[in-house]
Image (cartoon, rainbow, N blue to C red; front, side):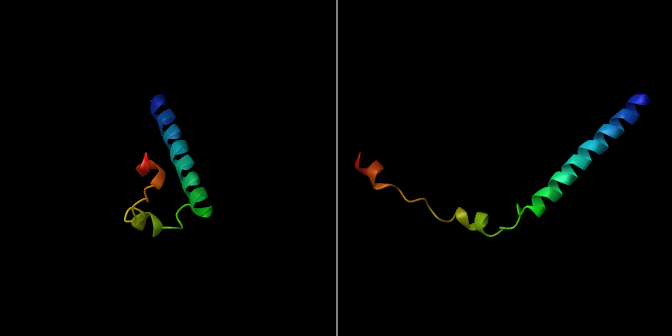
Length: 54
């Protein structure tokens, strides 16, 4: 029965860690740009001419 209390405490501390890291990421603007990643795949990278001439 004591191991259950230990596992509950460990799971709460891990959940708290992920909650704090999520709030830290949102505060620092990690999720601000939601438009660019969706259109980035639509634009092909330009092929450098040096690689074509070789």
